[in-house]
Length: 468
Ligand code: ADP
Ligand code: GLC
Image 1: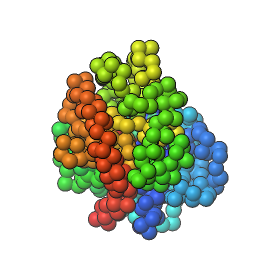
Image 2: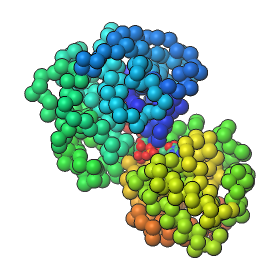
Image 3: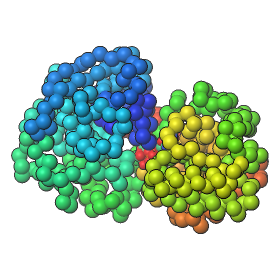
Image 4: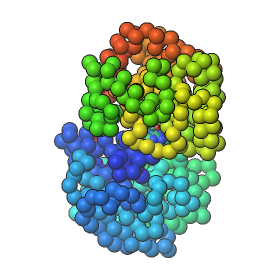
């Protein structure tokens, strides 16, 4: 099958969170199954574009409403990513340093979607499926099905994967004219409540809808930032497919970013060396358990509670644990996490920012990773942690619930029910007790490092879905 993945992120070209990881891996594994999966994404101003070789496959004019712009689509020449990569360059719109966060994000992603469909319309053949990821590509199913100029694409099946229903990309009806022409009586397919809502539109118009874990599919029927009833009514065409991880990128045995590589047999020494290196850099104590948090500092992740959780646990443990945080987001949380450094020197540290290499080193060097998420559609951190022999401490929600089993149930993680200071503090206490039982920890790591979360399974599940 020929599959076109449309996304705002794709590792290693541009990654803000797990969406990038998924779109950088799923197509590769679909190709390994004998299919022909490609990724089409906006061309941002980043080093990937400068450092790699491309050929121009499309050079034309596009428009949103009355605004016309030149479009160029570049294909990466070497196929070194394991899939064909196409970057859509729209001068003045896609060419920014960051992926998101601009006032004109609506126009940026709308222009990207329109330019991409203009290009596909000119192909001599039709792809077997267009797979859209999140709201940034959410208007594609509507446009394919309803816009006059894409009449030739109408029979191409579209799939929407919801990585996170919190973000929907809403904008006002005053921008309706920015979409290519269609019969206005179909406008209802674009809207939700008072806005044009790209995520809602994709849920209505895509032939199939997927979520990134089965539990998240259950949860969004009662908690989806306003889309609950819509998701419930489209439930018959929806399915939850648990994300995988890219075992080639996330492999402690061959990870070039680590101080020392290791596998499930050599995990004790391997982690010891990585922890020592990490503690050296961050002025922490390698003889004590190391707890970490890696992620976006936003409410969904429970990040607002972290300063208080860290403060309490460090104070109660009387210096017997270390904590290291890596993340960026809410400036208030960032400030509080930095301030804690003054209170607990030698056992606490925080790095504010995004640092891919450091994240690998922390997965390898930490003993426990905290994920007190309020919302977690899948979560990849706990899967990377398991593979690197770091015990996940997670709230029982979404994909965390589907992937982590509590040690009390014979499992390999520590689970709690609420995103609250008390629940997480209690979980950290349980982890501290577990840490004292070296034999139990060793058995857990040997087992958890070998759990198979590779993309092989999920890549096939998506193929089965496309075939339907
Ligand atoms: P989400 O996509 O909601 O942010 P996921 O758990 O699916 O959450 O994926 C997060 C991804 O982003 C992981 O690969 C994680 O290692 C990475 N990540 C998050 N914050 C940072 C950071 N500050 N530095 C490096 N990597 C980060
Ligand atoms: C989203 C979700 C996260 C998921 C990721 C990849 O960013 O917040 O839970 O793992 O997408 O699907």
